[in-house]
Image 1: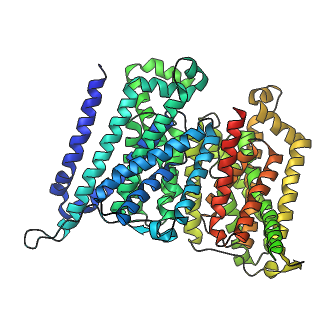
Image 2 (image 1 turned 90 degrees about the vertical axis):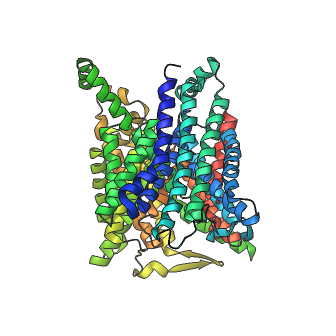
Image 3 (image 1 turned 120 degrees about the horizontal axis):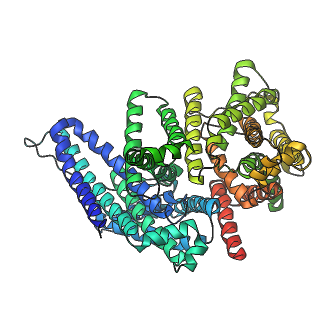
Length: 341
Length: 288
């Protein structure tokens, strides 16, 4: 319980920051805040992607199927909007449900697969699911051309009261709150798994499944639980992104790059922590945005160099670097010998 | 009529399997001998394709001639990448290796994009590109046939090297037990370097062939990385002979679906990965 208080504090702080950010940005940058809000939403989206992937990785399951659950969520929301008159927002719980059920199915058949075998099986699942969605009746899922998705928010222009750019601001602000809310939810889920007995169960399963089973952990249950939680979160993210971007299309919505970013970001930030994936997402988003503005063409070369350098110079991510620096400050002699060895 | 179509599908599949096997054995070398999960493997393939394209456009080199230059170039590129990055993550967790090689892949892909642009590039001017043979209603292109034969020779040569030569024995020793190998006096790091450079070279030769068969773009490499990984895993890690069978199985199934099923060309990837998925899941269930 002693450690639960700071967690609560940090979560509240995050929630307050999300609640205040649009107002502060607007006061500081006026019209420019419109694009800042959209960049911030992208960064939060990356953070949710990364945190949900990390949640699964804590049980030792290196998934390459994140794009599958992202896509499943996006398509669930898109199809719901197309075939029913139900409110669009119901697409979010539906996306979570569909992704969770798929994860339960995939997770149960891949339970015995380890390491690279698990990774390739989940990658294969993504490619097959993409093809299945593409081959669904065109009237339902739009085939290879995809579907349009109606926006979640449609601000109205009030002449005389509002300026033109304020429509875009209101729209981005509304999305920002929903993205922020989903991030807070992901953080809460992550903290709960870190501060309860689940942490020990997840870690035990990751480090040695047989020993975990002997110690009374049920590896299958721990793995499936992580898979379902992780996928439900990323499924909702997929649905939300579909509404914000306005369309789904097999090649884009199930793109392997989604999976790559989901895995790269937590490694960059620091694996098996709540803070790591969020920090990683913040830093990588900032790096990408700066590079994009500095070099119009080929800016991704710099992005790749940052990734390569990060693994060579901080193998345990940003969080690992901080812990090492903090330890060095508190006990300089001890860590010096550690460095030498 | 249908029988001809079936035979055509089989033949095209067998011919395509050669290239798959060539790219996959290179990756298997990296995974099996060095133990590095290399997601940048397909980029060597892509670089090979674009070097061959450039040599053809600037100097008029026939792709077969350019092999003489591209193969050593890829060996050097592989060696440099190993020396500057890979060797620092040999002991690191798989995930670190994955991040590093994804980073390398992003760098190489975007370098190619800056140099050559995103449009498909092909070596369309070679005279033999359109040459083909008709045998009992089955058409066999000279280029797919040639690439199959070259791939087969290279894969068998690698197999022979691993089985017979001193270098091959050293590689197998290092793969089995790194510490033991260094205790008996093998220079482990140099063997790793050679193995990695060799794996880049094999992929690069495959790339030269794809530049004649298709019209590649800078993203062609990553697609092949994923397929090569799937084949290596299907064959079982460290099993070179298994790679031949795995490549054959997936390439023939892909090709049969593409020729026999209406609109089947779009299903190629789905069939490929469906097979991989089912085999992995079933095999895990049986061994448990």
